[in-house]
Image 1 (cartoon, rainbow, N blue to C red):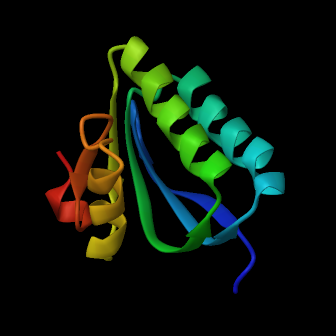
Image 2 (cartoon, rainbow, N blue to C red):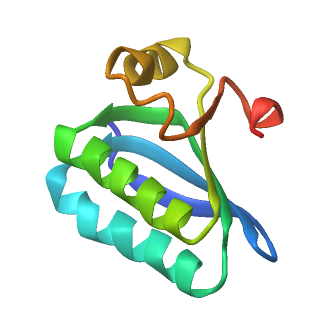
Length: 111
């Protein structure tokens, strides 16, 4: 599995796209949370997280993403998850978390 990576692939004012890739381990959480918090502090209120290249995710990592979504919502923002893999979106629905995020199979479908 590839090493975890996080990149801001697009930033336009209050809008940003973050790409998560590779295998996310518990040790990667602080780096991910720091990157998201930098965006929030810079005024980002609409965030799309592209997980198409995310190979694995710990339960702590998933919980952190849910928490970051909630933080953004308390600031009246929007948090979308996009994935080229329908199984990732199905997992979110199986966990009953579909109301936590805007969900799309690709970036064009993000609301």
